[in-house]
Image (cartoon, rainbow, N blue to C red; front, side):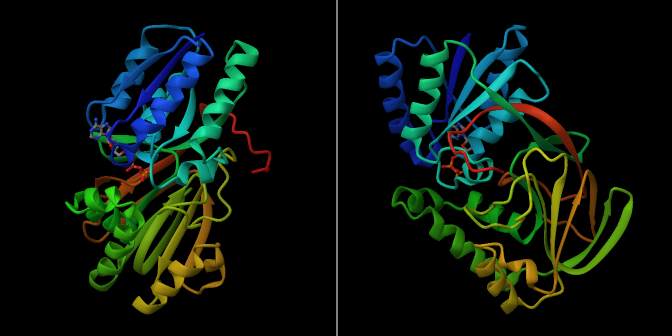
Length: 319
Ligand SMILES: Nc1ncnc2c1ncn2[C@@H]1O[C@H](COP(=O)(O)OP(=O)(O)OP(=O)(O)O)[C@@H](O)[C@H]1O
């Protein structure tokens, strides 16, 4: 069995390297043979994983070390090839992936678990197949998301945070969440809700004054907000949440209740599940996939059932 680690040295402003140094020590201590690759720039993780998997028919275990953006790239590299199994050692700031997929959140625990499996079984450990959402913004701009895809307010916040020059400083000070909150408040006062037309498995829905549409494979976004409380990673469906026709002040309330999924009872929040979703807007609105800006055109989304193999977590809670 071949074991690869793909490390994003830029995740959490370089703190991922500290995590990696500890992982490496443990690997050497247990005499485990591995190869490590450090991503060089955004998008490099996808290319590297494709390269590894395309050259062999063997099943390969690829462990991502980084944040939500890193695991997004590694999984996009694996899809649609069937010979890659993905493991994850969290070393980022958002942690929505580990929350939603019920994986160990603590990097040390995640490492110990993976090493235990490798050491104990000397073969590729048990993995589970999970769904993903395949999106297409334009012919040239497509990919997969594993957390969620968003259109509107949250995508605008994500875009502004990613573009911000002060993000790095805040992250260095351990205040990554604060910058998200600051931009959220800023965008809240300037964002203009718009009309959105959707086709969900053939059913046409039109919503007025839409703040956001989120298509989710797991419940969490924005660093722990439970936007799609009923989303399950392997149920063959994507969960659609639409926030529409509510006032600016009620949006603030909504963001508080989203912390525990309490927005279910708020009028102006629509939930459904679907397999094929088309989202059309009256004007250009930002779109994100797993927190990464992907454009601002209409977008089509389709669930890809049991699309990738993910190494089991240690938690025994049921999904
Ligand atoms: N060598 C590199 N230099 C700069 N950016 C990189 C490099 N390698 C990968 N990246 C990019 O870094 C971005 C951020 O990574 P990631 O999301 O894993 O960390 P984070 O933002 O600290 O964590 P989180 O998303 O969990 O808050 C990703 O979009 C990835 O494409």
